[in-house]
Length: 218
Image 1 (tube, rainbow, N blue to C red):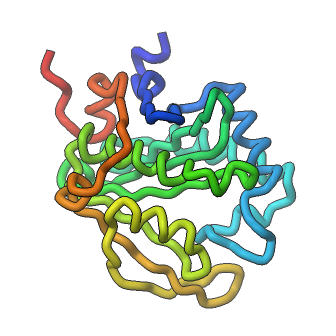
Image 2: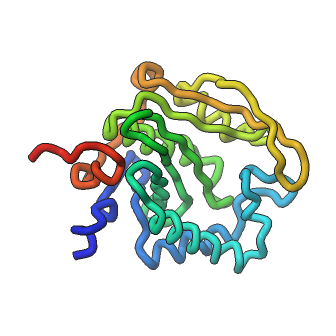
């Protein structure tokens, strides 16, 4: 079976309302359609790469291609886990956790998006909780980092809720103009002190070598 060769297909994260997993074909199609329907107001760009400026059909196709590209380029020292987020069985968004040289650095970064019609319900906070639990409790991370543009207070609020601390700013070019990005950093101690969302992980043990970690003892 394919899962024997790519065990991440069996990885599941669950919170009280959500399930996060790699998408099957139908779920990937639903994720693409969700992106085509809209993620944010057109006068604002929350992403470093302005992929949501594409016309709806191209935007949907870019979601599919991005999913395949990240799986195809996966390496234990450079990986990005793009998890489809489901609420009551419905695809509502995407949550990413990624790392380079994780086995040595023990640091992950996160990013995410939600379909516009699913925003404002606390889902973003809960799906971040899921991947932070994977990182710290499942993979043994020491730190998690994230960033948000100055005009994206919702993303910064999610980071603060989870105990991230400000980690400086940087200036980047987005849509041809200078934008301020606020960096945030979460230590293991702060995560342990602030976690409140229950999370369960299934199917992690056979995936550990793909994350740059020793295989689980049997």
